[in-house]
Image 1 (tube, rainbow, N blue to C red):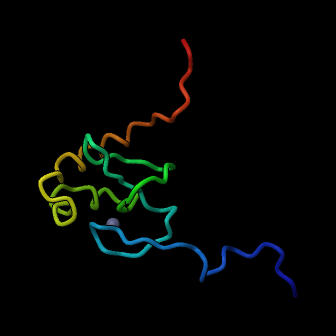
Image 2: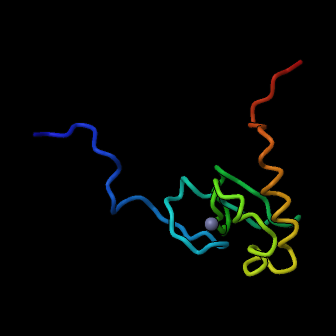
Image 3: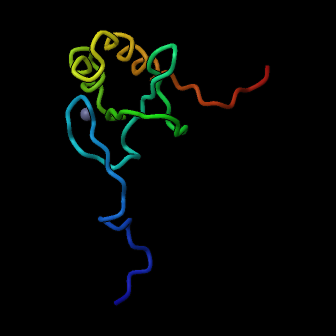
Length: 96
Ligand SMILES: [Zn+2]
């Protein structure tokens, strides 16, 4: 029997560690935060500089106290960014 549509090979999906709960997950299930001169920002596509990862689907991981370990004094800001991200606003905007 051949299986034409194999799911992604287990070995090859890049895994990252959530800084809040320390669990390893496929990169696609994590949000990437990168450090900018203005602070940390949530970026899902850009790959620039160094980033840290937080679960995309787990609000528990967006809590300030969980982030403090990784972000220190910036934890409140990061928590805010993650929560704001909830606002569904993709890049493309309708012109009105
Ligand atoms: Zn997590």
